[in-house]
Length: 179
Length: 108
Image (cartoon, rainbow over all chains, first blue to last red; front, side, top):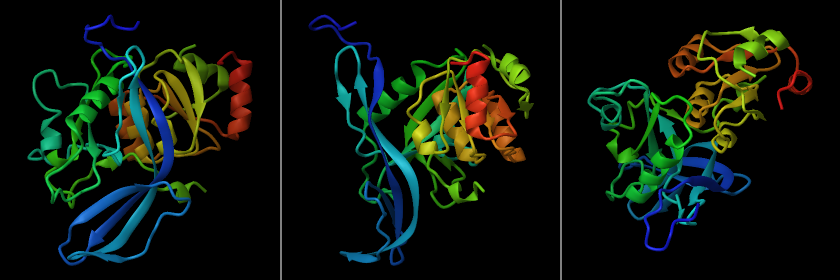
């Protein structure tokens, strides 16, 4: 139902603008930073290139998808441009902020996913927007069958180390292992 | 129809003992990136036995997963599905044959 004028909407999100592409990961051999981006080209780019002090090399490409969220009652739309993929936390490091997001009283049945942004190394400090994180949490919890289950989405800047993280990225790896 | 009832009627192999729940529909896909957009309570039919599939299926809250063409999930995949309470089933035939079978027994 559409909220009355001036009334805050209890959003009911729908997934919109769902589009396929590739999650492309690049690394700078000079400073060891890593970046990723979403490519909607039929064949993802693999070329090395220089950008300022960085020398970016292709590390891998995986089929992935991007989407936005739109509230059905009020029509508000949250563009998730800064989300390149979601990753399930496998609870490998108790010191990691993503792990900690799933701990605490009543945490049984809690599953933590990190929303991965483009700048894996977070050199510039930016990550997925608070608005995007809030909408993702609301969307993935609004229809859960089991009331004791909870999905928690956190920005990837909470992750302690990209090098040792054992998280499972929701992208299509292993497709060539089908047969 | 519930997952347990379906497994019995369709003669599906059962890989784990997980939460039995009602099937609200069926979705067929072999791409994790495609599954992210589906609704809650669906039965997912796939060839994929990778752990990412379980991570995505848990996020969208599927009722269960059927691996067609005799695909068998690895132990770590079954363990993750157990933790998530997702029933894992298997079918020896191809996906089209399974789709027809599901329709015939009333899963629509």
